[in-house]
Length: 411
Image (cartoon, rainbow, N blue to C red):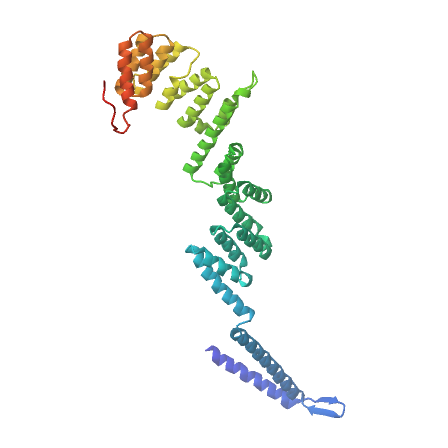
């Protein structure tokens, strides 16, 4: 049985019941007011009230329809102003995306007061003004953004910090981000911006304190995070090396204190080991530097570390030479190792062995430092002719890249 058929049956049943009720007792209704009176049955009165209720609802619907139509037709209605503002905002954002900063600023500025989301207009307009280098207008727009949307203070402050960093206003950006970090310590982008700012300021100590947060929240790729950590600790080691002159006797070396703070994986990095050993040598802790280099080279060979190993003075020069000679078995033609061995042989007063190592190094790689060491050694050994020959070879290395220019003829 269909629903419509059931509905018809229900309507007929209700009509029949009403008809029976009216026939059995139509009732009586009297309405009197001053000299006027209206007499009718209850059922007719109810029908009249129902018709009146329907008429009032119809009139209300017509009024709403007329009002809505007037809003659509009236160009000054709030609805139409908002619609036009949104259209201008869209055009302004397109101009912004295309890099037409002046047009974008004009459109976004004009539509902001009537836009659904004025914050977007003000922030984009502030960036457009920044690109036009109108920094005063950019700051004014950020203030208007705050007035239009006070609860968006974080978004506004972050945008302001970005623009300040781009302008080189690093101290102002630091104050802005410090305020954001104080009120919202877990705001990830603020943390990342703070890291960039410390890097620009070369504030290595504060950046070092921020490194764990940057790593924990994975705000950089692993490669970028590792490169940042290396740069920070390398700078801290150099800073510590400059402070060694003020160290009181008995205090720990500042360079070693920094090294102890390094994460264990970074202590295996050859670049940081090189910086560490150079700063130890510069601060006079050559014995410790020799030990650090020896342990590192026994674990993993590195040309750069070998070069420094040949420069530092260990506690036992003979043992130092022996350790370096052990690496010669696997690197017999390494010019850097041979130069280091020549220098270590000189430190042990083994003049002949030193000459042999230095000549072998120069034969494998014609290097000006090796040449200088050989010239100095040969001069002190009294072999002036050999020293002069080596000096001419070194001079040839120095003038190798000079342009070909006319020279006076020999007398």
